[in-house]
Image (cartoon, rainbow, N blue to C red; front, side, top):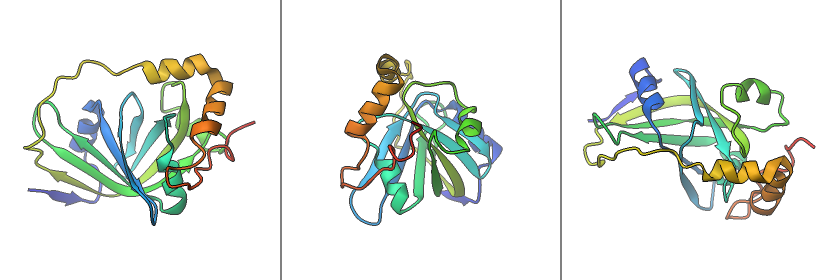
Length: 184
């Protein structure tokens, strides 16, 4: 049976820390809904009603484009080991870029990861838990390193060039704001 709560309690915060994978969903007022799997050491719970997600460079930049139009975000975690549980976090998010004054303070919560693109500062409005009985059991092997090594090899200038080529607009043609907010 699902439960809706106004914030993350300590056991849900512990559950999040144990997860190797989470999913993020956003949508603008029109166009496609984006749902992406996320991993690596890229999420921090700051309080029962606030979390940070360090968004690493990828082939698209849908979340940033969507948040310029509608700042709603849903994150979902599934237990793939141990007791079954699905956790959904509903909230609003603000995009923080390296040129923004908050960047240094917020980025300090994370390891220095190559390809760091934005931080999404999520204000949690509610959380929902549900049983997760149909989620299969999986054994975690390791995080993949290819994304990190790819952007380590590209370096800061190569990463900015990649953003210019692949990350300036969404698949629906909406701007992402990535180059307008990149330090020169």
